[in-house]
Length: 186
Image: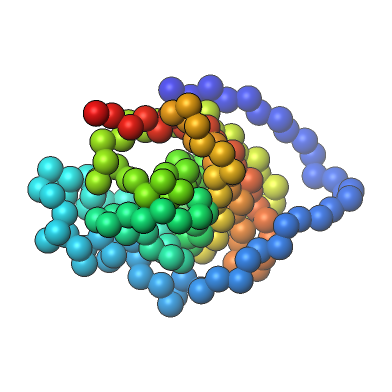
């Protein structure tokens, strides 16, 4: 289901500021999410393996990889680098569409970090209820982007998450907010 409201404007000057991009390990020094998953596949229950290793069009490099098998309570915040794995050309609309898609890939799980749960070790029902993306600057999604996520609140089977997406040069290119369903099932 997609319901979209769009606000368009011509480029113009004006006041400008942004949050500073955090200093994190560069993506070249990190393992891909796929490689991290492959390293533990023998310990993943058979019923989860196909989903766990499904091919993705986005290469994600977590700065601090989460523990899928032994989750621990931690601050509800995570940083990941990401980029598309295949050439996609120069159409800015395609880059924007893929960024919107990628922005939903790890955001909801941020709220679960504070509780030491995940979909593999607990019976969770999760779904994105609303998801908003604000595009601030031009970018290329075939170049590394840093996704800085946090969750300031969770309760009543809901989690609220925020994200900031930075280009490698430190420009804040997009902001994201999401409320999602996070229901513990019996």
